[in-house]
Image (cartoon, rainbow, N blue to C red):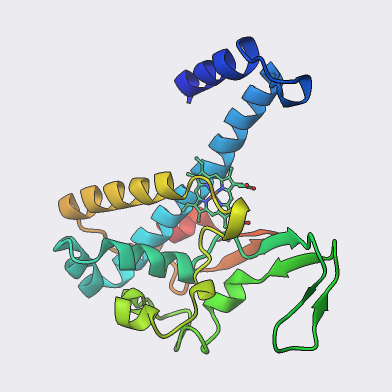
Amino acid sequence: MAQPSIQARKELVLNNDSIPEEKFTDIDIVANAILLFAAGAEPVFDTFAFCFYELALNKPIQDKLRQHIYVTREKHETMRKHSEVIGLFRGATNTYPVPGQSLIIEKEQKIITPTNSIYHDPKYYPNPGIRVFDPERFSPEEKAKRPKASELFFGDGPRFCIGKRLAEIELKLCLSEIISNFEVLQCRKTENPIQITSTGMVEMVENRKMAFG
Ligand code: HEM
């Protein structure tokens, strides 16, 4: 994080010939570095934690994963079941009549897409229950059965998550490295089902220590 920030300061603050409105200040560089760290660390840690929790509870899936068959499906099913960000937030830039419906979204209206509800809607994810962990939902055949917008783990449109690629590489590398060297098991303190608490925009485990031992 330090090296790119120093480089960004050189290019955007010290050697920037743009008009004043497009110039960056030192504060802009520091603020962006903090934002990237804050936005980038928590969701990746939590996806890992939930992933290992589910693998400990679902030994046959863990064994299959160990054969390096389907890291991507595993990762997506974890994000469907334990989506940390529970909704997407937008403001309408124009008035928009929703096709085929009487609904008109007025200009500047605030819109919430309740992603977590979509992930637990049996219309898109049959048998979405708290005890079901089924990475096969993300096989090409199953994915083809539902609309693309039912998978918004990293958002969509011009403001989608800028860390998506980095997060996917982190998850893929660490998951395959750990799972090919270790076996993840439940312990005495493992909660099943896990107790989730919602704090506004994000969901988290009620008692992290209890859940992950
Ligand atoms: C499992 C990991 C991650 C998940 C599930 C996740 C999820 C999301 C979601 C749902 C959004 C909102 C997108 C929208 O409104 O359309 C978002 C935005 C954002 N994410 Fe991530 N993210 C992850 C990792 C990261 C990482 C590693 C970084 C940076 C290193 C990052 C930086 C950001 C930033 C800066 C935004 C705001 C983008 C904007 O408003 O233009 N995220 N993320």
